[in-house]
Length: 154
Image (cartoon, rainbow, N blue to C red; front, top):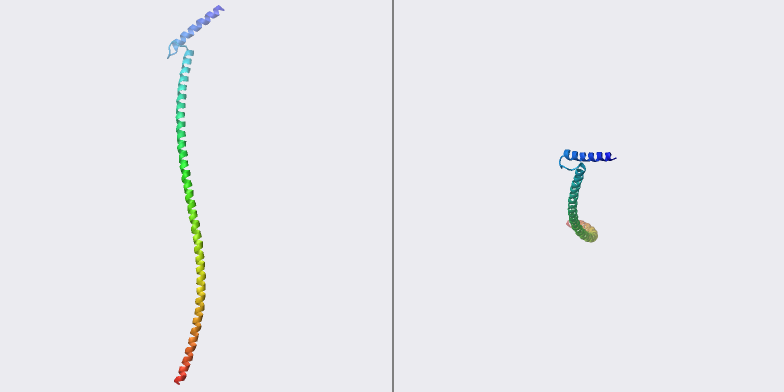
């Protein structure tokens, strides 16, 4: 058993010496130590990257929040403009309602005027008939006067 232990120790010394002599980069380090060192370096780089990503994401988040706040302000302004536009449309609707009422009143006046004109037409028709009857009378009078004149001249 001692013999086996001695062989094991001898092999360990030889492997360590071989590793140190054949692995380039960092002399006098075992492969396990080199892998541990590389792992630590990769961990350090990864930690640095994660920290940088966290800083960038934090800055991006704050920029996004500020951007969303500006967008919210713009939407609030747009909402105010729409309220003003709605008020203007309501005023225009009221004006149109007033104009409609005025047109109804004007239509009523025109209807009254039409009635008056119809009455005047009736009066003129009656007057025309009277004048026609007077013309007939005058025509008859003229014919009578013409006959009397012809009798007198005979």
